[in-house]
Length: 400
Image (cartoon, rainbow, N blue to C red):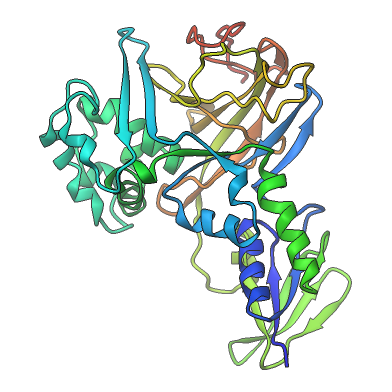
């Protein structure tokens, strides 16, 4: 007899759990509160830019073995594409200096021993100074584990951790930062190749999972919000939805794959993040140079990373048009005003939902803004950095 498993939430976590359980011959029932699956990892058409926009973390590193295993389980691993070796061009806007960080394709971080391949003006000793971060507990802050200063920090560690943690690195969890370093830089270039969902997140990571689950007899119900749980002897015996209830038999199981706020409201006593950081999203488009690298690191500006995405564009010539999204994050309310402190390249969503802020016990609040051709602003709060790297971009005052 098949075991019934009810999965609350059809984001990537919920879909991944559903696929694994369906493959284990469980009878899977997925309940999603919104009208679409994928959660923070999905695609939508944006009329302002005439582009398909990916919501959420559009870029993976090849060391993300869990994400790759998920894509493999739904038959779409080939849809995640990237360069054969991990090489990252950088530019320092304050000095004009450019360099190439060459992590190679090894399974060992041999690049740190080669002066020509590592960050300029750094020594092996600088990299060894990161060792306290490797096995730090999650309760410890990055700023307490390593010195957040110096050439290596400003040219590599800070841009990497800011992109991964969504918080100013000194204030982020050293445990999470250590996991990032272990699974990327410490694992050699083979774990650091940037991978992109060429046809979009929904096409590669969401829609194939839905089709696979339906083929295996799973039920997927959208617009079905769980509003309460019935508990008996610390076990769930009833799922309460808006219009009906579902009884949970002793042999059934329930998987919660929802964000912290609904999880805390549904499960009494559950420890969840309580602090939040604002995020401002900007979407714009332009024609990038044909020799533009797939990923460009930026030092000394508000932007940390640039990535052109040609294949996801809806334009007269998809091979010549670049899709870019600048993601302004790590904003904090100070003296009643919001100050957007960082801009980093990401393709994010119309509703502003993005990946987690990895400050201990925190996640972001969301705001949004969109820009059309040549970074033309739409709305009073639209502002972009005048880095000189984006044709048509000009600094604009922040909306209050």
